[in-house]
Structures are given as C-alpha cells and as structure tokens.
Length: 293
Ligand SMILES: NC(=O)c1ccc[n+]([C@@H]2O[C@H](COP(=O)([O-])OP(=O)(O)OC[C@H]3O[C@@H](n4cnc5c(N)ncnc54)[C@H](OP(=O)(O)O)[C@@H]3O)[C@@H](O)[C@H]2O)c1
Image (cartoon, rainbow, N blue to C red; front, side):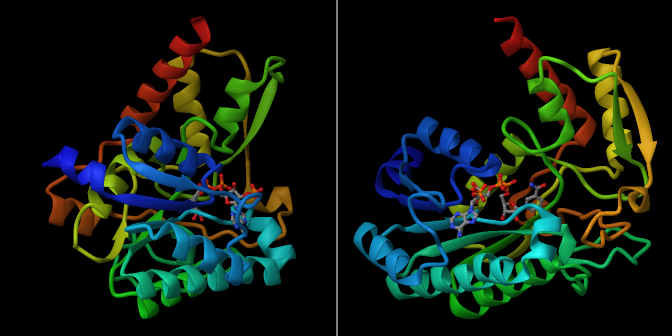
C-alpha cells in the first residue's frame, strides 16, 4: 500500500538546497519517491511565468514550498524581496497547485506572532508579526490558504540539524573553534530537529487533513539553554557567553516569547513530538559518529 503510494506520487520542491529541503530530499530518496528539487539557481519562484511552465510540464501531485529568505535581518533591509519570495512566490505556487489539482505544503514560522503572550501559541492563536520576515511569511500563508483548497500550512521554529544555519552547525563544522561563543539569552521559543520535522511533513502530505499546523519539538528554551545543553552533551571547552538581544543591535525586531504547541498534528495523527533535548542528544551523537568515521 505504502509502496504503491510512493511509486505513484510526484513531488515538486522549491528552496530544495536549504536545510529543510536537503533533509526532505534525503527522505524522499529513501522512500523511492519521484521528485523534482529546485532552488533559486534552477527556478526562482518569483518568476511566475517560468514556475508555471515548469510545473505544468512536471505536473506534481504535491508542491513543497520551502523557498525562503530565512535571514530575518535581510528581510527587514529588503522587504520588497521578502514580499516577492514569501507572499508572491507562494501566491504563484498556490495558483498553480489549484489549477493542476495538486496539494501544497508551505512552511511558515513562529515569527508570525508578536511574542507578547505568556502562553505558548496554538494554531488558533491570533498572528501579529512585528518584523518583515513574519509579515511576509503571514501573507504567504493567506495566499496559500485562500487560493488552494488542498493546502497545509506548517509553522515551525528554530530549526537545527545538518546544513542548518544555527551556531551549533557552524560550530561543529569549523575546525578552528573560537574560544567563546556569544549566545542570546532573552528570546524564548521552540526548537525543531529537522529530521523530526521532515518525518512529520511526510505524514502530513500523504493525508487529506488540510489546514494549519504547528510542528516543533516539545519544550521551551532560549539559545543559551540550547548551547549549554550542547556543551554538556559534547563536553567542549568553548566558553558560552550570554548576551541580550539589544546588545546585538540587530536590524529586525525579535519577538520575546514565541513557543508553539503541536496541537493539531499530535491530535489528528496520534503523534507525540519528542523533547528538543532528546532530539539534540541524537543530533550530537550522529554528528560525532560521522566525524569519527
Ligand atoms: N530555519 C529556521 O529556523 C526556520 C524557522 C521557522 C520557519 N522556517 C521556514 O522553513 C523553511 C525552510 O527553511 P530553511 O531553514 O531550510 O531555509 P534555508 O536554509 O534558508 O533554505 C531556503 C532556500 O530557499 C532558497 N530561495 C530563496 N529565494 C528563493 C526564490 N526566490 N526561489 C527559489 N528558492 C529561493 C534559498 O536560496 P539562498 O540561500 O541562495 O537564498 C535557500 O536555498 C522556510 O519556509 C522558512 O521560512 C525556518
């Protein structure tokens, strides 16, 4: 049954060279699923004409829209481009999905919330973004939802894993480890291990349970908690220094508190997202094994 599904389905992916896209390609290969993986060099989703032609040719059953300007400060500095990628790019893909009867899955962010809550955000919490990244990602959500009936919107938060842009991945990859790392201590959110996320996305895209989902590992923390846990698990010497967001003078405002609960996903699919600490321990174990090979 599963094998038959995998043989039949065709998946198109945008933003496929990013951290999430790379992990999803690995999963699809493992499952022997046909897919077309593109990134900005092959197919810029802000070029509707080309995107339309490519997708009408390929005729996927599922469109995964992972293309993003994931640098939050760059979005603030170039909000026009952030709007084009997140909002217009999504509008184009949703329009095409609707035309060819495909499902579409769009990854969104905890930054659609303002961080003023005292409680973790659920799927039915009211979004209110405070920066251009969040604002344009939210517009993308609206286009996806309004233009395609067969759509999944998946908000996730603070991805970590291979190829991600977190300090931990950079730290693990660098040979000359610096004597210290400055880590933010006053923003709180959920962490998400990329392999856990792609497994969940795969469950979702095979279903007909369309709608809005939060998918994150359970538990709440700041990057300082994450760094200290990584240090404990890896036993490295690098000093971890705590910094406040305002000391970094970042261009874009950051919400203070945006943990998410994976309520819809856990309920509808009878799943439990594991804690970020357990996922981090797995990630570190895997990376250390790879390095020693
Ligand atoms: N990373 C996180 O912590 C996080 C948190 C919440 C939500 N998300 C969401 O999760 C998704 C995947 O994130 P990620 O971490 O994998 O991001 P990523 O590593 O930055 O990957 C995004 C990819 O999209 C590409 N891209 C940018 N503009 C494009 C365009 N116009 N057409 C086609 N491709 C384009 C990027 O290319 P360039 O690198 O060359 O620009 C990059 O390869 C995104 O929707 C993001 O908003 C991520």
